[in-house]
Length: 109
Image (tube, rainbow, N blue to C red; front, side, top):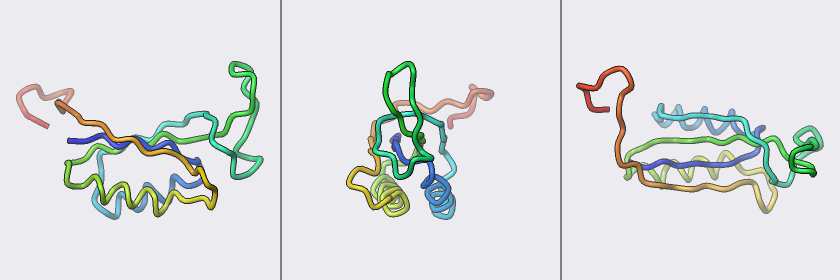
């Protein structure tokens, strides 16, 4: 099993999530984040007192999938995450050793 993590512009997330759902993906998580991506518009950006500089509203998307689905999922994220900028975000992959259900120790996930 793999974990695909993408850091993306917030305004692209709806299209990406809809495309993933249409492809049958259900194991996903979306978290609001702030980072240093180049803002696509002034509305995406604000000033961080903690960092002492402007930050961009980003989304961290995590998708958990079988190994054979990785390439297709990355292609969907790239297709629907484009902003026209050189740096529209990043995609990372990592291996997952175990998947456990919280409420059912007797049933493998």
